[in-house]
Image 1: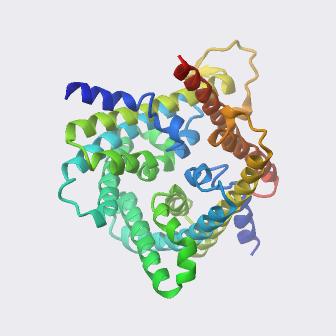
Image 2: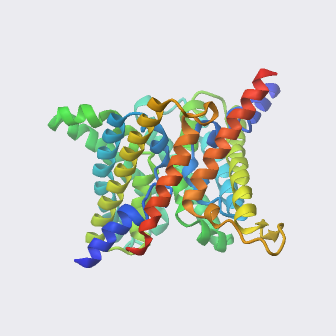
Image 3: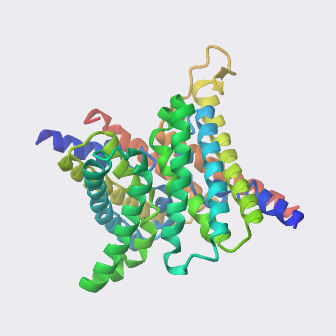
Amino acid sequence: MAARIVQEFTKGLWKEIAPLRFALGICSALAVSTRVDNALGLGIAVVFVTCMSNVLISLVRNLVPDKVRIAVFISIIATAVVIVELVMQAYFYPLFLVLGIWIPLIVVNCIVLGRAEAFARKNPVALSLADGLGMGLGFTLSLLVIASIREVLGSGSWLGIAVLPDGYPGFGFLLRPPGAFVIFGVLLAAMNVVSKRLEKR
Amino acid sequence: MQDYLLLIIAAMFVNNIVLILFLGNCPLVGVTSSMESAFGMGAAVVFVTTLAGTACWIVQRFALEPLALEYLQTLVFILIIASLVQFVEIVLQKVAPPLYRTLGIFLPLITTNCMVFGAAILSIKRDYTFLQTLVFCLAAAVGFALVLVFMAGLRERMEVSGRIPAALQGVPITMITAGMMGLSFAGLLGMAH
């Protein structure tokens, strides 16, 4: 059982890392990745939502009729998101303002409903929690990678600390929306190459 | 009148909901491999977004705000959208079977399309009037459909050309193309904000 839990947890971090492998949840991943601190904030919020929704859905999995399951799942997910929204508004107000509509939009993040549908409704609570935690952290990890590239090359800093020399002009294109698409495409291509190399070994 | 024209141009092109605001990127990858599905999805989204956006606006102004229940916005909106999609599906099936056959398979997917939800929330955030909400949702959704159709056309061509390197095939090249398309849309920035 313990081995199974570890396996369900770690698959979300590399083998099935949602944004980079399946292009799931990329809307918010691209939108908030202009700075590392914003990416981290949204990542933590998503981890909480995936964990909570997976656990609750796994708990009610035998009570919900198949036909109305999507509506039930969506209500559970929305409840988790409302909790995150209220907590953020109360304790992390500046972050709440910066992330704006992306906090309520966690409801329609494909990863959350995807895990509910593909995993939590068929598996016991402990496994679902491990799966939710892994998938949420995988999302956070992808976000951090994209945000690091964009912040370092775009504004010459990482987490607000200057890392490139003072005269660095900043590659502004990466901070704009089109830059996000391009950098994400390049990242996916790089990931394809690396995975293929690893498979060959 | 001019205000509405500017609103339309801003929502459709300058602040394109897919390429600039990053809403509805999943279908951009998922249904653009053929022209036909891009068109079907686009049409279904135009229909649902306009309906859902205005319905959410009415509920927000006449139910949530008078009762001071704004914090339930997320929960209520997503339920409105989910039930509306279900409702549209049933009505179409009964009233217009040919239309249902084209749009049918895309309708369930729309519930979790962040574009519908995003347009509804943005209309509230920006304090639009009812008419502005209607125009904004319609224009934004048409902008979405436009990008989907453009992308499907480009992808079909790329597939035929057979010159895309193996590592870039599929999602990566779609993303890079979206970036290029976004650049050209952003070029209209001088026209409206």
